[in-house]
Length: 393
Image (tube, rainbow, N blue to C red):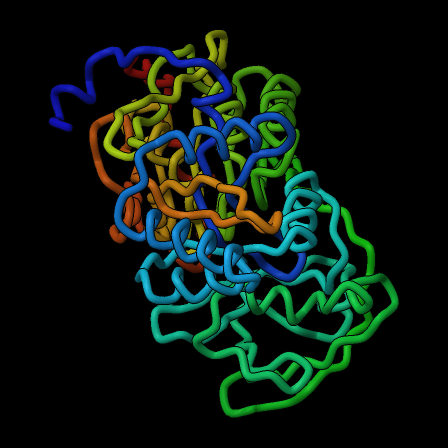
């Protein structure tokens, strides 16, 4: 794809195909990112199967089919093939795990209320803790290192496996059961035994600062998050600025991120992406608030669908981006059902921002670097914007 092609008006495609791609595979102990619910998920699996398999896609499919023919576990064979593939974001879920994955994207889950990611050195780091959750009550904080779960060391494991340990097997994955965590903070190492709880994900929170600035914090793009952002913008005081806080947002449903973009854009391109080399596009709906001053807050925990939204707002001149460089997760995954009912989510392509920038492995550089006091910096930027800029279409 050339840069010029990305500025052309890409052909629109049916909603099922446009919104079934999967942008993330960081599944935390209480939050999930990167898939779509209901019929869209079925369409994605069909799209992935109908595309000509390439590279490790064919290897994973062949391994699962051969295992099924030999009376062995297709899921375990697929996991071994994925581990050999080098696909950093691929994951294989059992039917039960995938059901939990869907529940998490719907904003419901059983867990301990922490978000985590795997660092480049293989360490598992806590990125966020839900207020009022078992993890919060135990004093666990963002930045803590997770070393073990029920005696199993987790360094180097895919996050999906860490989640499976945290949630337990079919018997343990219930509210009231316990899980023992080995943790590290600086030079301190300790263990905590937590009791799992049934939690709901309050993905969008809204508050108003002195002076009328509205802060819309989006923790993850779970089902309904996009409409909540649009409603928060409609309810904001006339002419007042908005801070869209995407710090620590590890992604979620791409369709919800596009809906959130529609709150600030009057139609037009949000991102382009490719699936097995075929170029496609995502567009905002018309009628968004294009005049209200807007700052997007980001950090190293801003990932995937949240980066897609940030890139669209930045490229189209709609927001000033404040914070630190984002994570750099710009690949596309699609689910495929295996013979035993398990599901493999494999990377099939990458997305680009409206100007043609690739995010994968690079992240998005903010317009204004800020770490401590980033929210105060965002308020300062809003106060200095003066007359709202006209966004580019």
